[in-house]
Image 1 (tube, rainbow, N blue to C red):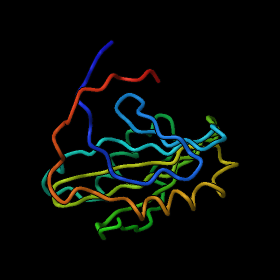
Image 2 (image 1 turned 180 degrees about the horizontal axis):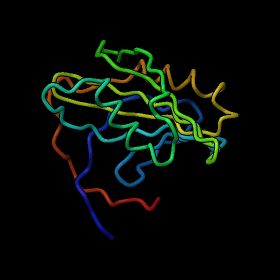
Image 3 (image 1 turned 90 degrees about the vertical axis):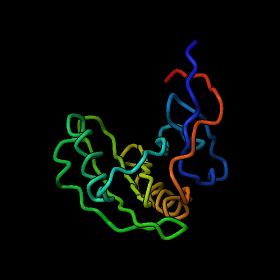
Length: 156
């Protein structure tokens, strides 16, 4: 089995009744009805002059092959618990029957992304919880912390 250095992630509380698991290079928060999840991606070092709109645009372009028309995503402003700026945007794939709501943030040295992945039928229920988690996210005050230990990759 492969081992890799542990990643640093945005900090959020696991909602009551949900489970938290490391899946590959991400953290998954999964509700009791396991047909949805909130995914925390590893923190990334912020490139000079990058911003939440640029980062969100990059994330949505990476999804363009699975989610048509990412340019139609309307961004809403959100802030972290420490008042760092961020954006939230929703994208939907009718062919995959999947809805995603992305939240991206930046500090002076870190970029962070988390997203809700669910069936469109559950968005009305789960999006408010996701937005509350997004507003409570805690980001490091300085650069991306170094890896702390070795962890096995979980199978997806």
